[in-house]
Length: 54
Image (cartoon, rainbow, N blue to C red; front, side, top):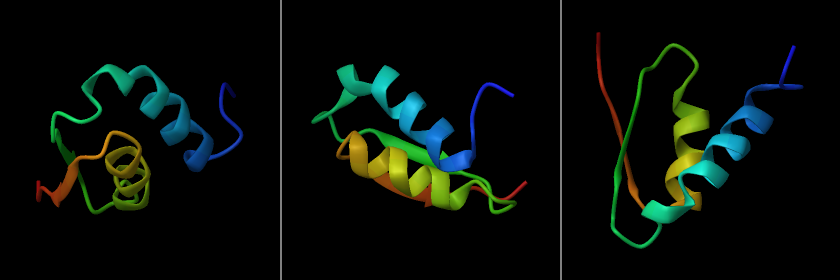
């Protein structure tokens, strides 16, 4: 498995999305376990978090 847990995966993704920091990006997360990951990413890129229902 490439990641130890979802938190580590979110942190790795946040590093790759660093160029978007400060541009107020919108991070969308689905409620089936991705909202905590979305919060980590949104905080890291200084963006907003919203939940999208599927």
